[in-house]
Image (cartoon, rainbow, N blue to C red):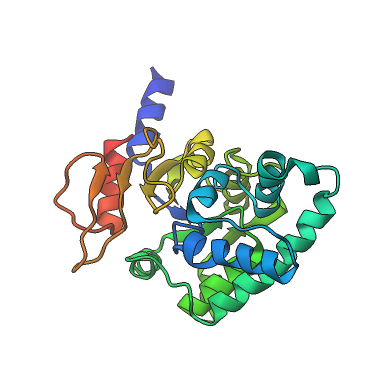
Length: 266
């Protein structure tokens, strides 16, 4: 009975201490505005007769990681090159693609999604801790955050888990577990933000309650495990649409709404 009472008391006082954000498609529409364009420009620069349109890229996004995505493309669409290209080749192509992506981002061609900056500022003002959990490279994260949030943007995030810092990429939960371990928090103390089924599988595999904001490439994916599925975070003059979830009096995602969702899904 004592153990049961202690369990009830602990869970009744559990609060949200941190928000953990995916990057591509979640913080910004980087896939269409940045990555896809950069891939094609890199292919052209390197004299490769490859071109990814939006339909093909939507399919390739089922594979996480740019180098892994190219390997999948060769396996399925250019099998004659399979024996000619190895991981080092993909790494070199990806290096050029990253250079191009960062150039586009720093020149302001990629902006944050609606409500992202507002939610970050509100979370910090209420004493919540922030972190990043993404498969994109640390360089891409830094370029996006500093170009959109200013030179001190990185300091707003306590932990940035990015790229190859863990062995297994999403949908494995390694990157989220890495962030939780670095912050010294349990999954019950955090809420994650994702835009894709692969990302949702990653976050929920370590027990994180997750809010999904869909993108053009992910809106038809399976998000049954999410607390709520929205078309965007929204703002006061630009309300979100609930794709899956309970009705609410809120019209945009703020800390009060996150706490409401958290309580509904305990």
